[in-house]
Image (cartoon, rainbow, N blue to C red; front, side, top):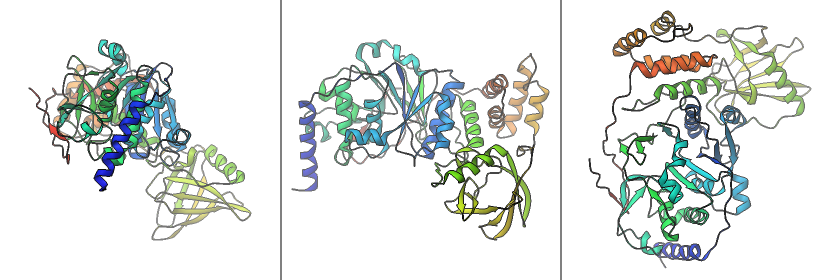
Length: 497
């Protein structure tokens, strides 16, 4: 038997097993969002998503964030996102307890829906940016009636796709789904969710015929004859983003499929993208508070951990070397370097060294600085990048935080216009003046958003975010067909204008 024939037989047996099974009913509490976002790159996008939900859209929907173990979400990352109303769920023990064959993020999406703690769940990809509070989706009449809502992609499943007969379904040309968002009442669709997980467990066979998890929901629901509602409007799209719509045709979910937020990089500007200023403010805050890496320090003794707590409580230090000016550095919690962070000093920890302790600063997977504390409480050692030089680190009471970039024209205009304080708020004259500057100078909105992310006063931060949105209002949406390259099984949909 050929490999292809063997795979086909496994799919047939799987389909028969799904139809013959009666999975247990599902429970849960309330409504919420389910996001799969392990690893630094996807976590960055999830943080922007949740931050803008809370601050720009004022959404109160609770969130579950699923991931594969400590290597994907560190303690520092957890400390950043949990205060935003996020419950972190390590999938590894859940998978081990159920014996499921779940190994990648595509497979984990349906598994997270099946095992979520919510009664009703909206699955969102981490690179989504909703236009409005998605809580309204749970009250749509179409959802209330069917208990499940799916969104279309810009391609269709072909009638001659081999998946139809293998699963015992009628051959058809069907709207392919885009699974960046899936809305489901878990209590009403326990069997269909379980079937979707079973199909995704067979990824080695099924993903040859369909693209990832996107159509496993459609196939599972059809196999069991379960009801669902399909949004009747195809998404707006270009090569960087899909904009999914609601049942009235209004833009709802901005899915940045090929324009993900990049930690420490330049963010791609997208035509018609809404809430850009709020997203840029979230990125600015994230980059200020986090190294951008899912780092966990090695095991240490209790004594070494006690020294770490002393260093955290001490605040900032001065780091001196023989070949560069001294600068301040803050050793923060969860092994993160705060101010003074650089490529070779993103993380830190203390380890035992004979009868003393050794301080290690690292940034690229190997020690960048190694120092030992002397009797005078000054840490001395070497920087391990070329040229290797002697370094010392000592505490400074009341040291100032690392300086921000010098203010420029935008900062001065904001200050003169009362954006940083005063009861009058932001005038239209200030908006117009900033608009003129933006016409000739790049980065005006980005600078305002960055300043918003640095504010401790929520009123001023909100004022600056509102101002950034008003400087250059989003242009109207348009649709440009996206080019997709699927090997088999799909055909471009005919989308009327």
